[in-house]
Image (cartoon, rainbow, N blue to C red):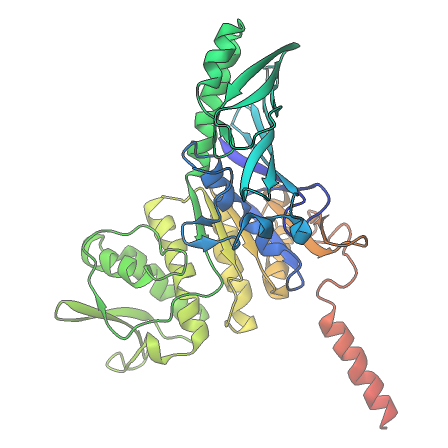
Length: 427
């Protein structure tokens, strides 16, 4: 089962209901502070909220990623008694679909949140709805109106994050809805399992060190700031025949100036270095090279590790992969994710400011090397009535786009026009 859609309402910059269809390669583009990161990070927020283990409807720090100082920071315009809506849809190979939707009400006096509405839909089963009918937000479990297949009952329900406590299924059994109870129990477990495999790599990667200790274990992720990339390479070098290191080295040599990347041992420690291709005795510590070469290392390491091992994080969120990298290498970086997106089970949500990154995706589609059905592209922009909107841009099989919004990557054109105008003025 895979996550295929995100839904949100009154969430951060997005006042109006919005939905984001997720495909193996989902790209978010737009101006600064438009809301791209808020949309891109939502699976991480939901991974905790729908785990069945959360202590509050929405936790504001997940795996070290900060979503706000208080719940008010999640509400559009920080309305004191406001509410947000969050939801997700999942599908399996048989096109069975599971949809989860919850409305979370902020109670300002107590600085707590209540799940005021919940809905679970599963293909082939009646939808389950819960509506809070209480007056005291401190009650736990709290009174809800349960609706299922035309039947209505008032029940007391406790929520664990955005999922009702499993005792809800006992209520369904008592209502004579045992088959539905079994279906819902199965799929709520599947939902939490899918979202347990969410990876995140932020825009500011860890600065490289000159010297590292060899890892005691075998890391499988570079981490949210990429700090584990050297350890992952070292473990591969010592214990996995060095296939990942070899692939990373070849990628650097091919796309970033011709110098292969290597590991050098210094007793119980090691360094990551780049070697002169004509004189391997000359090496440069990665701490001494340009920022772009060190910042891109975690992305390349994670991608090559998953190619070699066949392991994926399921859903991987990457913010500004191109940061500090020369624009000429943006397309080569895009190719890493294009190749990964062709594989079964891999899904990437990438927030980017790079026109070259998007152009490489369009080019591969035009060259028939990438199915456009595996890509979704969204433009995040200011909404006329305030806040932000998501606009889907369809990439056609020719690599053309169905509707290119005004202002998308128009800076080069505007600068060229200004240059031409200045030339005419001063001719």
